[in-house]
Length: 115
Image 1 (cartoon, rainbow, N blue to C red):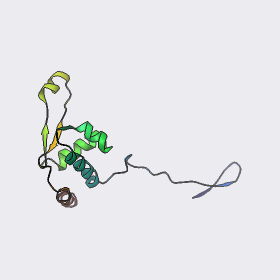
Image 2 (cartoon, rainbow, N blue to C red):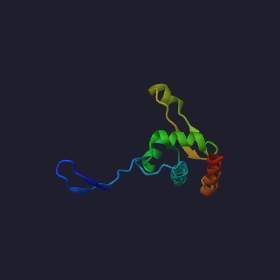
Image 3 (cartoon, rainbow, N blue to C red):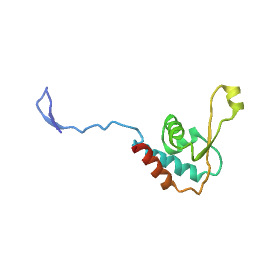
Image 4 (tube, rainbow, N blue to C red):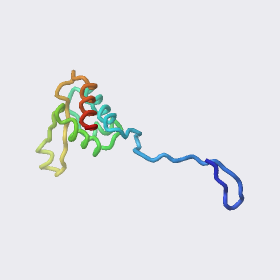
């Protein structure tokens, strides 16, 4: 895109600045895929913040996607003693079945999103 300087009259090129999500992953299905791949690699319980850090997604996005789309496939553990002592709700997540096919889950989620 060419522009002209209003002071000197010289022409110069400008680039368009892209706006959007910082990690470049806007599609919920691809974000869910990142979360599922990370959970499948883990053997033990994982904090939501750890999932967010490792997948480079925001903790709110991870929590939202888990609550909205993945409740059938994961176990959620909320330690009561942590909440009682600190007042902070913390959740630990684990896949119910680590041998589950990620593509099948994603296909079901795509159907749910598109309908």
